[in-house]
Length: 483
Image (tube, rainbow, N blue to C red; front, side, top):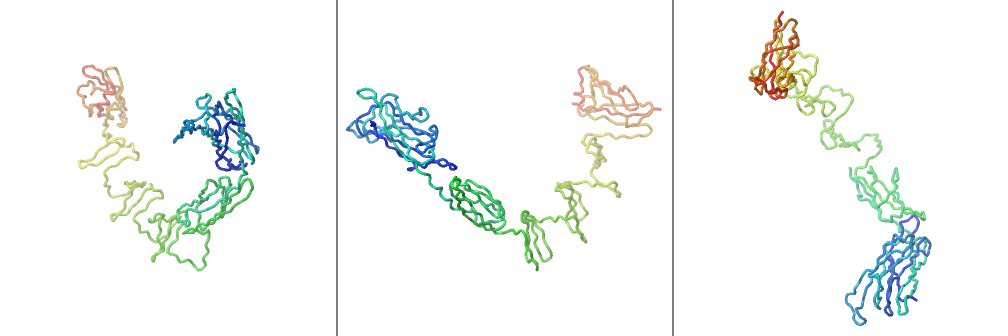
């Protein structure tokens, strides 16, 4: 006979045995320990839990249980009654595969006074399969006047046979009437242990989680929810129907014609509206739409503009004074032609075919010549009775000749000299400082297509190509082709 009294409670009140194919049954076991007799000096209490899958087993794995314990002292003395009992945790830990060991918080022998109680809680118990009676074996290790004593108690609890899974219910759509462009969500209430499938015209889909969004229906559609018990194979059927405000029919045959103010596409919402004068075409936003055809046979076209097929293609507009050619962005465009036969040209500028070709602008004073698509001054090449002139690009072409001097090779091939050319030179530059140079008018290495110029400072200080680039120096030249 045990020194203490043991009572078992469960949550839920009736623990259901687990069933293969379903979510494992879980619950909480409470073991209430009380003392209705004399004071007991206890060192530890051991609870052996039946572990396995048979009818007499509580759980298949003790390690998944979360155990905890509390000792409550209800009386300060045998005569005083405390308004607020004092509760302290006790130590509880697993020993081996199937034993839970409970010891006082101090780890030493402790008095279990009459009227006090200890609650051992086993949470997250995965209930073993097969219904039956489970017996918890309790062993008490006590200290008495005669020495150590060991006493036992058997505490039974019942595992009930698992109930049939409750049938699902309330299969419903989130919208009874579906407008164009709206999505549909179907919902239901039911156990996750069922296998669910929704059947609809033209298809079926396995579903889970209590909600499912089908492809948007084109017409009134009835959906059937099929719930199957994986253990028994028993099936439950629920139905719901959704209406569509603007149904789409796969085909329609009309023998005497159709009277309608407009027609509209399904996936693409272009619309044709019938007016007294003909038809109007609208896009999916309600704006003016586009007619796409391979050819159009017309007697004439009245339009504000025409454009290529792409949004960035060129466009022609028709103002009162003629026509404008523009890019897709609205900027002025380009007319491409092999020849143009005109009586005159009014323009701000002309340029070669490429972006890096030279170009000419026409200010009121005359004309400006620029180089390489930039606003840097260009060179006018001319040949008259064996003469030509030009200049080098500012700051470019200079190279090191010596630590205190630089040189440049000047290309005169545009002059097409054939004899013994004579060259006259000067140096210019937006940055200045050319007044302090030596060698600005001396030429070397003369040929019919080039010559060289060598420069240095008057005081022999260092001179580099970087300085020439900084000051923007360039060589002006005139050549005369002597016979």
